Amino acid sequence: MRDKVSLKDVNPDHVFHLNSGAKIRNLYEFATELTTMPEQTFKHHVSNTKNDFATWIRHSVKDDDLALTLSQITDRRMMLSAVEKRIQELEDINTVHAKGMPVNTIKNLVIGIILGAVLMLMTVKLIA
Image (cartoon, rainbow, N blue to C red; front, top):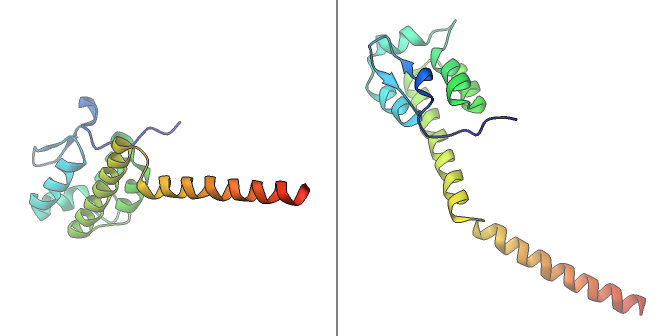
């Protein structure tokens, strides 16, 4: 079973240690570090032959989709954009889970029930 992707801190044993000494515990901190880290720190962890961040995201954050996206990026600003987009997606998912079913889903469910009832009545009339 695939682990649930979370915005929470990773296990303390899986914190990412930048070569500058800073620690990254979650996607929010990762986005902040991408904004503020010197370019040489970024280049230490990302090159054409390696991507430490993608590896950490895959194994510690357990987000295969984001890891795949990041594995193809070698530009810090593009990586920040991808991380911010993923954070937004995860926040949206968490909001839906916290509030229950989205309004569109409920509306579609009600329409489906009404249409089903109408079709059932029409079928009963045709048979009778």
